[in-house]
Length: 359
Image (cartoon, rainbow, N blue to C red; front, side, top):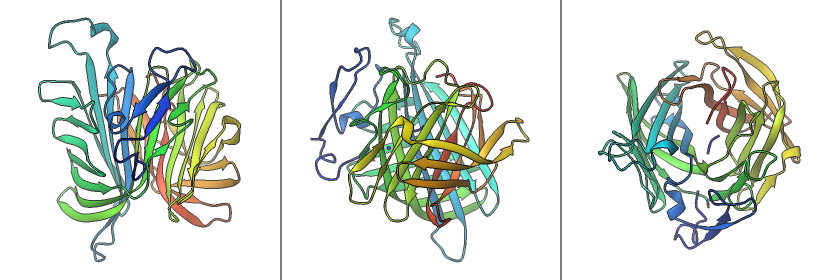
C-alpha cells in the first residue's frame, strides 16, 4: 500500500504536531510526531516505504502520448545485525522499484535495486524526505520534490509541487491494518502533486506534465497473521478530491480489514471504518509470465459512493523476486462514478495473488 504529505502553512513549516503510536509501545500509547522530521526515515521501525505514482502526458500536443510512472523506496531494519559494531554490518537494507507504463505502446517497463545502507551507495535521511539508491533518488526541498531514475530501457527526472495540504490517513496519521490495535502503521499522503519533467523510453525522449500522488508509511506490525496480501487504490479526482481505499485479504479472498479516506477539495478528511469499504472484482486477467490471476476491474464501495476502477493496461505486473521477493500488480487505472462517468485517475495495487506476501 502504499503509501501520502503537508498542511499548507503550519505543516509545511514543520510546526504541526501529529499523534501516533511509537514502536514497541503498548496499544493506545501515543507519541507526538513533527514535520518535517517525520517526512524522513524511521530506522527504529521494521519496515518503511515512500511510494510515488502518477499520470503523465506529453507536453507537446503533437506527441499524443500518455504514461504512468511509479517509484518506490523500501527500507527494512535487519534485527539480527543491530548489535554489531562493524561498519559493514547490514543494519538497514534499501530496495527500490521503478516502472513506466506506456499506454500508446501498450507496454510496461520496470527495474529494481537493492543495497545495504551506507558507503555512499544507499541512504535514507532521518531529517526530511531524502532517500537514494545509487543514482535513483527522491528528495524534498521546501514544498517541492524531485524524483530521478535511470533504469534499463527508461529514465525520468521529475519536479513535483504541492498543491494541497498533507493528508493524514487513519486517526491523525495512525492507520489501522487489522483487528488488533498493534496492526497499524503511520501513514500519510500527499495527493494532487503537480508533476513536470522529462521521460525517456528507449530512444524516445518526452517532455511531460501531469498529476502525482506520494505515500509514506512505516510500521513494526503491519499484517494480520492470516493476511496474504492487499488491494489498494489511490486516486486523484479531477475535481481536486483524493480517494484512498484498501482491504487486506486472507487466503480465501475474504477481507480481514479494510479502510481508506476521502478528502473533497477544500474539505476535511472523511476516514472510512473497516465495515464501510468493500471490493468486488468485476473482470480478471491472467499473466502469461507467472500464470497469476488478477482482478483488473473492481467495484469499490465506500461510504456514500460506489466507484468502478479499471486498469488502463492489463499487463502491469511487476516481478521483484530479485529484490523484495514479491510478484505483484501495480498500475495506472481510471476511476468511474456510479453513473459511469470518468472522475479520476490513479494507481491500483494488488499483492499476494502469486504467493502470500511476507513483510
